[in-house]
Image 1 (tube, rainbow, N blue to C red):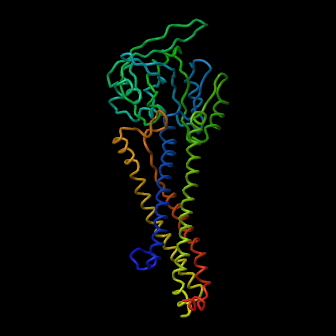
Image 2: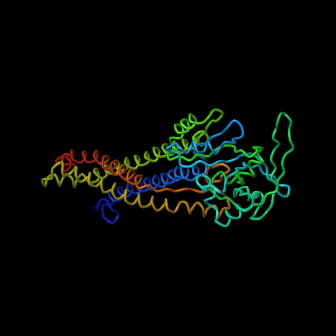
Image 3: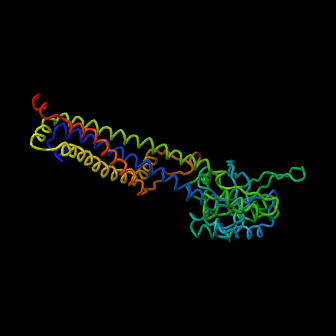
Length: 403
């Protein structure tokens, strides 16, 4: 303990041990923080983004007028949680000469299930105001900010012409009222405009039909199989898509980044463990006289080897404990730190124009702390074996003769 901790008087031994522990603490803390952030992105992808994006979408090659029957058929699948109709079309919104493009989505406010997740971030008063206004609209926060819109403001929605029989029709102009601002923290804030299902059906030229059905499932990673089974039960003229077709590459990129970062940061722990080897080798060289005296007093090579293995284990244990505590504290503070820097610099590090979320997510998993700490401790113990063997094989007579 005297040669390991800074409070001792081991001089160079204490300095080298403290240096090894500091490197180990830094490596472990960094790895825990980065893993927590990557876990946060993974969790937000699964729970937030995939909570807003339909797991499976059923489309028809034309307007879907028999959606009630199709909905009942889809609900019979044991893995299907809910089925809700929607209408979707591209449009433009204009206010005071400013124009933005939107993806308008018609939802049935009377239905819960999948659509309720779109409205989960709204207050009951906003939802009630939207439900009572057939020409109301819910805009994403990003869109509302670009047009400087607030609750109760009116704007013009322009829907491109629908070609029927080869003859173009005039674009539709509708005055809508902003009834709520949608803040999901995802890319939907930059493009989504929610309107009533009947109103969307009219604007999209579906004559009372819908664009398709949003299907939520129990297992989001089995959507390919579930979608294929649903399509086999649907009549001809329908097809299905799933979230893996639209967001699968993003999810795979997050997983790949997490794995690569983990490998890179574990290599940093490996470097810290190698530092333990070099430190203990220097300690053995510095204390070879003491080792020789212990051997002459009857200490066996195993006793000498155990001393340095225990020292390596102590360095690893202290480094793991302090590093895990520092990583845990850093993970809890990194989100607020980044948010504070954004406010101070008036700059957004993450923006939904580019990234899937607009904030730095953090999800601390205890299994990561145990894995990182366990691997680091084992590395330190293994790193101490070589210096311990060097110490055990010192020839006491030759060392004392040289001194």
